[in-house]
Length: 420
Image (cartoon, rainbow, N blue to C red; front, side, top):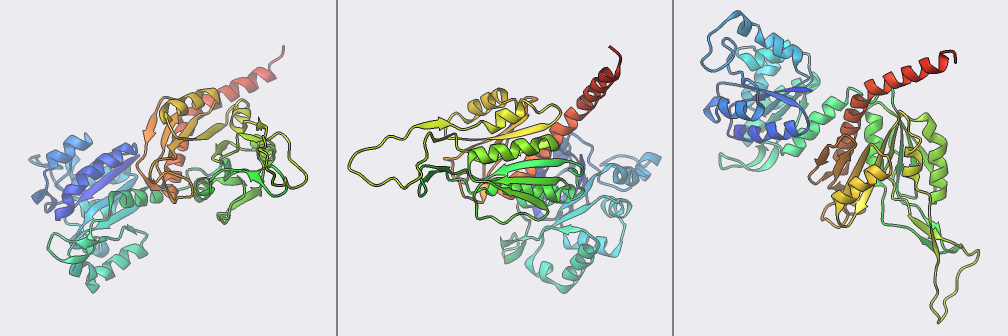
C-alpha cells in the first residue's frame, strides 16, 4: 500500500525521517511531500534517500530545482489518485487551518483537496497554539469530516514550555494509520476460528493442572478480526474476559473439549488462529473424590493431550492456519521447527520470560515466522496492536496464496467433473 507523508515546518520535522523507516517496515511504500517551512528544518535529500522515492516540494516543478512542465502541473492529481492514505506528521497549526478552510496554496494543501483517501494528522506545536480556540475549532472541523487526529503528547517542548504540543510517539501514529486502513474491512468474507485462554485438566474435583494464560492475546485477535469485517468464532478456555463485540464465543474447559469444539468448526472456517495455551499433558486418572493429604509422596502419571494445531493443520487444504509458541529459550529455532512440524502457515512466538511479554499482561513482544520464509520481529506493543499486526501478516499470506489456491481448486473441480 502507498502512503503519502506530508512533512510541515516545525522542529519535529526531523522525527518524520524515522517515521518513514517505520512505515517501510510495515511494507508501505512512502512518498514524502514537504512544505517550504519543512525544508528549513530538514532537507528533501534525506527523505529521498530513506524512501527511495522522489520528494515533492513544489506545486509547479514537482521537486527542488525542477522546471515547471505539464506533468508537474497535474502531479497533485496523480499522487492523490494513487495514495491509499495521507499522513501529515508533524502537522502545524498553519496546515491544520488551511486543511480546515480549504486553502490550496502549495502541493500538500492542493493534494489534500484532490484526494479521496483517508487522512491522518499528527499535530505538533507550541502548547498555547494547540490550546487556542482557533486551532481547536479547526481540529473539530477536520474531525467532523472524518480526519483522524493523533493528539499531541504532553511534555517539555522545544520552545521551553511544558504542556500538550509534542508530536505523538511513533507507535501511536502507526497505530492510527493501521486502524484507519483496517477500517476498510480487509477481512470481510472470511470466517475465522480463534482459540484463546488456558485449559484445565482435572486431578480431582478440587484440583487441576493449568497454566498462566489470561486469554488476552487471543481475545485481542478476535476483537480485531471482527472489526476488520470477519465472521469470528472464539473457542475459549476459562477466562474472566468479556466477549468482544460481534464475536460468537464457545466456552470449553479441558483440552479434549477444545479439540472437539475446534474440530467441529474447522471445516466451516477459512482461517484458523490457534492462540490458546492448551495443556500439553493431563492426569492419566482423575479421581472422583478429593485426594486427601497424607505423609507419603504421591506420583501423578501424566499423558499427552491432543495436538490441536497439528491435527487441524494436516487437514487444512486451502485454509490458512496460524499457531502460537510460548517459549523460554531458543525462540526462533523452536518456532521454525514448530512451523514445519505442525504444517502451519504462520507461527507467532514470544519469550514469556522477557519483560513485557509474559502472561496476563496488556503488552507482548512477538516474532512472526511465516511459511514463505519471512520473519518479522515486533517491539513491545499493546496486545491490541500485536493483534492487528498478526492480522496484517494473515492478510499478506492470504493474498499470496489466494491465486494459487483458486487455481488449484478450479483444477481439482475440473478433474472431478471430467469423465474417467
